Image (cartoon, rainbow, N blue to C red; front, side):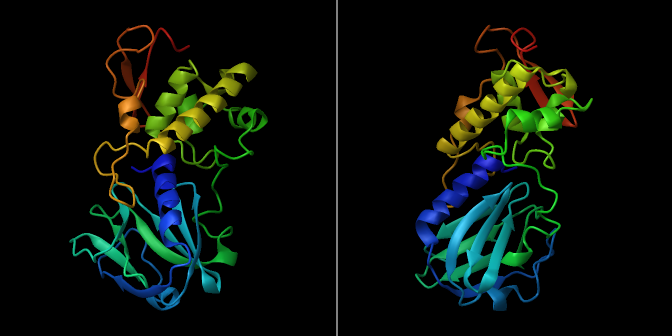
Length: 269
């Protein structure tokens, strides 16, 4: 599933290519999606100009003239691809044709993702965004904030993956950050010290920034908007690794919240 680094990579790539482009046509499939786009999607998007592109959590937001915002969520296997030819792939659900004869295509074979259009003034109150936590790469992600989040008996890995508290820290990045911070994923959250919180924040930020720098992680489906795969999977320290790069002990794997959780029993406490 594309997480914060993958979505941020797509957003940054699109910013370089399609800002100030005019939408000349929109084509939508009639296949049922997890969330169906508004019926007037085509009419509201057509002839609008792209003003800016942002990310909120794992959502891609394309701001248009006329107070409109296109919202894309990639789900498990979705892609948002920019090409110079219209693709005829079976799993294309929305194709946006630009005046420059480029095509922005939302492709999702498993259909866990979605696309829709909202009014900019309604974004914050919309149910999609109203319960999202802080951005881990923002100034709001402070030691004080994390200390408020950990006042719970939930396991620390579950806490940092809770999108109502902190957005975008998916399973891979939670594993990597906890390893870098020397914290076991099944530690009860409330047992972390102030110093450990500081180290965990630094580790989360470092992991996410490095993953963005390398274009995200491609384990199977993910591609950036230009079709490139991510490269961060070659830098994993603990996720799906056999031996700890620090002490050479075997990496252990357990299930937390139904997700694989990798850790070193010697280096993490």
